[in-house]
Length: 109
Image (tube, one colour):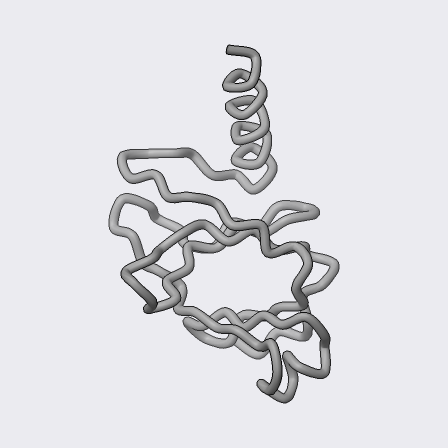
């Protein structure tokens, strides 16, 4: 029981940090804090290095910002972390991606 209580407290702390209120549809969370990242229009790109992010080569990934009708926003920015609804267009997988704000690169959106 303590394990679940700790999980729920951690989840609530993440949601509170970014200003997100859970409603109706709940998605899994993926920790992407190891990546450098940016938002380009309706796409999020992320990579293991700034060079890979800028070039799009190597371990560079991207996904669309998923527009879920139950939520008014789709990108939730906190002081240290940002939560993004992400759709990778792979196997129907949609999830909340958590990024480290200190690794966000220049905005181009």
